[in-house]
Length: 99
Image (cartoon, rainbow, N blue to C red):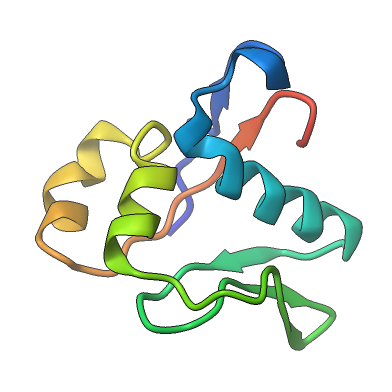
């Protein structure tokens, strides 16, 4: 279920934490493909759902640590416990200058 609060990240690309850089790159690819979802699964490449197909957002296979590091600042507080326990979570947010 999408987070109805649509959290927004403030600041420009130059003030974002370096840990968020991969997330911003994946979101830019999602935007370019007019995608609807970014799928981050440990052991797989980041994937974008666009027009009923999946497309790789990057060539590298993700680790749980890479996912945690790049997404920590955007996971809603109400989902933190489930996320930390390794459960699948689903939420929406936007990043300034990306959408």
